Length: 455
Image (cartoon, rainbow, N blue to C red; front, side, top):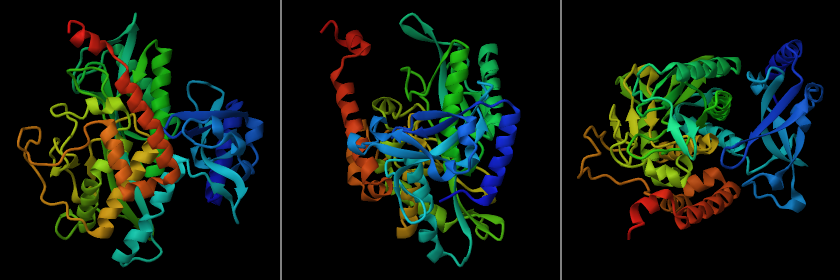
C-alpha cells in the first residue's frame, strides 16, 4: 500500500537531515530470492520527489538471480519504503532505502506486486493474521502483529594464504580481544545510526564466533534489519582486513552459526499491546501459543529448506553442537527444536532454534508464521513439553531432514508452506537449490582427499 502521511512526514524530516549532512547518493536496496542484497544508486536530487514512493525506479528483473523473469518481460520497479531511509555510516555521503518490487503494470490503486519479491511475501503473510485470529477473539478494529527477534551468529576470520584463520581462541561469554571488540563496537554504533535496536552482543562458543541479539520488533522491519546488519558486519570486517562469514558450519569439531528466532503474536487494542502467547489466568502459555507451537512442529520438515537453505546447513544440524535435530518442544530445553525461554508470563515467546544465518529472513519468517497460523487454525496439539536431553539415544522423536535434498522434498510436499511462499518463489527456489545440491555432491573437496587418497 502507499506510504502513510505520517511516514511521508517523517521522511521529509530525514531528507532535510540527509541534505544538511551532505548526502549525495541514495542506495535503493532490495533482495534476490536467496536474500542477497542488491541495490541501485541514484542521486539525492532524483530521490527528493514524493513520486518515487508511487512511480519507483526501473530495474532489469531478468538479470536478478532467482527472479525467473523472462528477458522479453524484464521490466520491474523498485519502490522505496520511506520508513527505511537511513544513513550508511561507513560512507559519509550515502543514505539508503529498502524497496519492494513491482511490475510496471498498474492495478486500480498501485502497481502490481511482483510475486518473486520475498519482502512482499512476508508482508502478505502478516496480513493473513487477522483472517486466522479474528474469529477466535472478541476484538474489533484492532491490529495484529508478528514480532520476531533473531540471534545472528557469525565468524570473524583472517586470510592466511589459502586458509582462513580464526582471530581468537576465546569461548562463550569471554571478553573478546581488542580487535574483535573494536569491530563489534563499530558494528553496534552503525546499527544505532541506521535505527536498528539490539539487546546485546557477545562472544559465542566457538573461537572467533560472535552473536548479535536483536530487540523484539515487527517481522518485516526485523527482516530488513537482518539483511542490513549482515552488510554492516561484512563492511567493517573488510575495512579491518578480516572476513565475516555467515556460513552455518565453517569448521568441523566446533559449533556452527545459527539464527535462533524468538517470536510471538501481539494484538493492539486502543493503543495497548497484548501478548497473545500469554495467559494471565493460568500464568502460562495461551492456547494460541500452544497451537502455534503445534503448527511449527507439524510443518518443521517443510520449513527447513527455507530456514536452512544451503547444503552446508546440514553439517550444523547434528546432535551435540547446540543445533536441534529432534522435532519436539520444551521449556528451557536447548536440545529441543522449539524452546520456551524463561521469563515473565506477560512477555511469553517461543524460540525456534534450527534456522541459520544463510537463510533469506523474509522467507524464513514467512514460513514460520505460515506454520504457526496453520496450527492455530487447525488447533494442532503440540503434545507435552520434553525436558529430557534429546541428544541422547532413544529420544523417540521425529527428525529434521538430514540434507538439503531431503529438505527440498519435504518443502515440495508441504502444501501449507508452498502456498504461503507462492508458486513463483517456490519453483525458482527449488530449481536453484536442486542445482546447488548437484554441484555440491558432484565435486570432491579437501576432506575427500584427506579421507580417501589412500583408498
